[in-house]
Amino acid sequence: MAAAGSETLMSGTETTVSVQNMSIGCPDGWRDASMLIVTADAPSPSGVTPNIVVTREPLSDTLPTGRVERLEEFVERQIDGMREALTDFREVARRRVTPERLTASLTIDWISEGVPVTQWLTYAYANENTVVISTASAGRKEFSDLEFRFRSILQSFRIN
Image 1 (cartoon, rainbow, N blue to C red):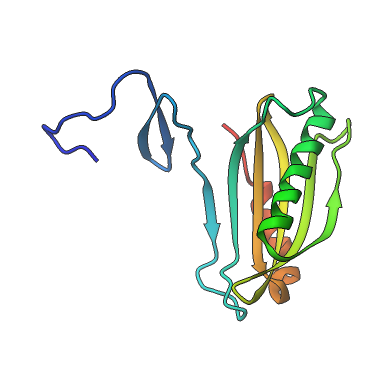
Image 2: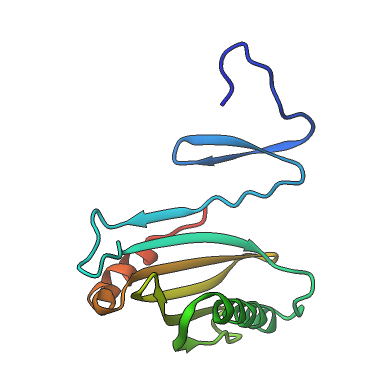
């Protein structure tokens, strides 16, 4: 943070990122990776605090150009990364992209620090070059009781 009378360390072109009445400069060569995070007030009995995280990811130029194929390949690459990074990863359910519905969803199970976790991920275009990913997470035992709440929260999401 810059105090009154302090020197500015950024120069050149920058954009300003604003979220929840806060802002920060984002200089050339940097990317706005801000997230929206909503969490329950306390952990569930499994020790996992239920939460939803919404992020944006730029789409690679190496992806196919068709909108259905582009999003499907993006999701496939995400799954490949999860298989490598997450302990005991298991794909539980998946809804693929169709021309009528340019979104995808994925439910996965995995083990985080010894605790079984379930996550529900949704993927949708923010624009031609960016995907919005929402990830709802909870302990595996509590997830089904929270699904309606997660869906309600996600239905309130808007891109301004």
